[in-house]
Picture 1: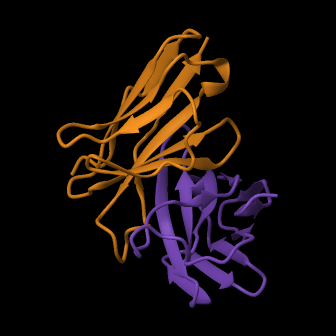
Picture 2 (picture 1 turned 45 degrees about the vertical axis):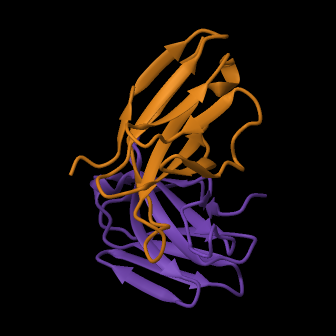
Picture 3 (picture 1 turned 135 degrees about the horizontal axis):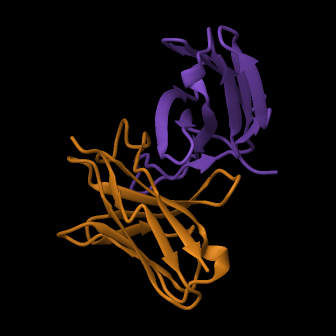
Length: 116
Length: 117
């Protein structure tokens, strides 16, 4: 079991470019979460998705950020027109179906975005 | 201050000593979890304690929860150099989607633990 796979591990973008971060959940997990970690801080919830559905996006910035989890393929976190303040580590996590254990998350190794 | 605040922010001890980290939170919770993060890596789940539990053990880890004080502690006994990492508490609130619990967690800022050989 490969666990939660994220790529790229490191991404450098110039201001105004787009960043696309990908996440494949752990095998058998159908719930995906994205979290952001700024330097020297804890993780902040961004969005919760199931296949083809956004369940909770209350932590997503209103502009430039979007997320999807299509029927086939990985979940994508997309940041348009990046700014320096978007520089952070973006972590994907997955969990089994709802019910007991649904809130114990398995995290990927993260994608570190640097905006120049 | 934020939900899920840890103290101390940094802790430096010698191998073999015990390490205690504390976490405070503000709102009612379903569960409280502790995660560990090695430098430059993702978080690894350590232990979960439910709101109706007061103490839980897992190997060298001991977690306590005091819901009246809205606080938790993580004790690592007989620490090893390999325990060097950041430790985060995380809470999930009473809200849920479709009546089930899900992984919208609120993390604290973490305690950086350094264990010297």
